[in-house]
Amino acid sequence: MNRKKELKQEYKEVKVEGGIYVITNKQNGKKFVASTRNFKTLNGTKFTLETGTHTNRLLQEDWKQFGKDAFDIEEVEILKKPENQYIDEKKELEKLLDKWLEDLQPYGENGYHTK
Image (cartoon, rainbow, N blue to C red; front, side):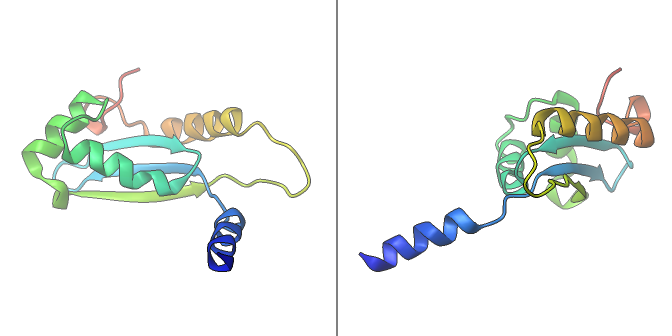
């Protein structure tokens, strides 16, 4: 029973990091830029791509055509959370995402986004 409590406490103490990630198609250079509140959810993103249920149709089509080995998934910026201060994570992630979309311009032939 004590072990169960210890594991629960360890889980609560694990630092949750969110931020911006980029999925890059190594075959054609196209990029998909997205945000997440928890980078551990990237496994779920990979799962949706592998099962054909990802919400971005263009990315999904290329994933099916080229296969998972043709893609890199990279965490490009971690959301900085000041200690002892509340921040609106959702708004801060939106700002970061806008910045990365502006920088990378993943539209048309360069990516999987539409303006």
